[in-house]
Image: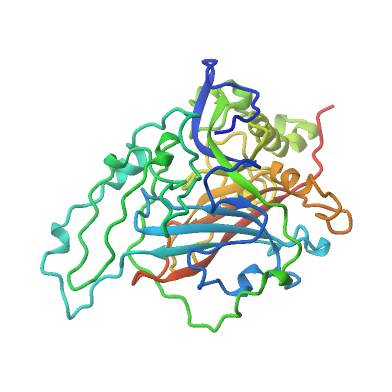
Length: 424
């Protein structure tokens, strides 16, 4: 695996490993034919493409450009599901900084049924007698993440010789800790179990949220067919995607937050509002949030992607509406001024809660615009976002009968680039 520039080293004794996996753009082959930035998308089934509407800007209705395609199988959370994630952006200047100009959707294929049996065909064994999944252990009691090993295979890689990816970029770190899967209801046919892979186990532990018990099928529609490649704007240059675990300096100025480091390492500010100057009020909370954002990114400056399914994003700002979906009590360095915490909107397809899955960070802009600056910009103005945050369905809803490829639009929160006032 490639070694990336960093202001810190995991061997100096002062660094801690977080639950975040970092993605990097690389021109070198990684063995992964699925994950990439720019270019055109590829599908699980080349005969089944998504509706064209998913690739249209909600502002101007033009086709957008692909920013990222991610091989997003999660063997610990959804062992029977093949899964990909796509993030798109509109490059028309008039659409910049408007909701709907950046979109994301998830592609999923379930290889075994998850629908409950019909009432007229009750199972012979009581559901109550089936072994229960120890979700508490998965969420809070799993083994610690292992140290990065640059000799290990690329965690985003996939074996192109089979129809199913064999090098899963998001497999668990300790598959033996999984509880036994409940048996399938009788009179239901399903495909043979696919072997779980362990490639990503050498990188980090990904925790599983608890899925809800019921779903609602999507409405029946006749979608517009996916267009030809010539219908899209000139694509961004294509690069492969590589990954490494995140290590951060454990000093107070760069602490990643309560979910990763002890509270004693965090900056706190309990000064009453009445005792602060006008300058202090302006600089807090936005400057603290932005400074924290830049401090974390500067330690691994070539990162373009931050991945932590079910985790927390690194906020660019605490003053916009996106921040209200993620601000948590105790995060003193992230204090929203835009309203109460609301959480990510639920999945429109099944009603399940959504969780944070990944975010894009500004070095991606450099990667897709560096070689042909003017051609990759509209009216001389390139992309101006600070971070793109994606929240996805916590139960990975799809075709509950199994076997069909399904596409689901997911929630996107964009924190746009803005002027930041500096002290002094």
